[in-house]
Image (cartoon, rainbow, N blue to C red):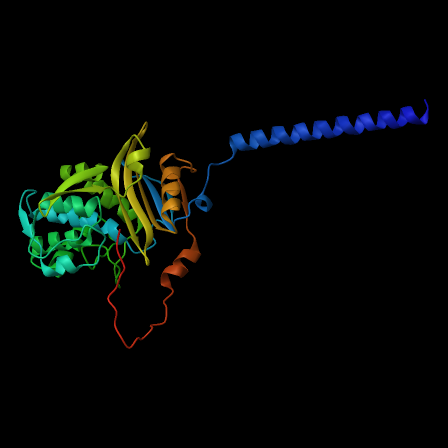
Length: 315
């Protein structure tokens, strides 16, 4: 055999070997993909998250499930429950100056206008109007401070033991916190109130405000993307970042999810969809110690000569 034939044969052997090696790698990748675990906490961007089986309360997935974090406007679920424990849906409430001046998104409330409990609940739960939460609190307990005491009693009664409120709206403040696990418990209890359940699954509502029809759109995107969605509540402040708690009916039961501290609203919905599609290893509980450090870190106080009214809004 001449040198040229030897070289060609050697070249063929190398090509065949390389092709076989590539085929082996491809096969390994396919098998690994088939047997590998679904996504874990690294794929959930929120600081804390849970998936709860609504039927037996089993924790299916958790990332820092008991980390205490600001609740933002998810607070309004407790506000709505406590208000309905004391008020009838058709009662009319006169808006106080305090409620009217509470920092919030639009539509703004006016001092002296009368709004039904039902419409105030819609404003609080669908559009997240902070003044509506304050108005419900004052009508229920006389003052927001007295109402907050009732809110904390309600949280304890439903075993949300790592939760504490300081106001009815979810606006930021020292000593107000919840956990993803507690938030899921709050959501489950809220669904037992027919009016709350009806409001939080409403994508768009028309309300009579100051003699004109006002259309409000729900801040919960899952109402448009998840056919089995039962509703939920969003939240946002600078301190809390983006938060959400909600429930959806799936083939094997009701899933309740809670997310606290997501960096953006886009990531919040991405995380929510992952959790509802069960893209996780069931039973996984991830505790990230760095998150606890973030929660405990305190910033040095900044003293200013002039006090400015806070523009923070809870959504």
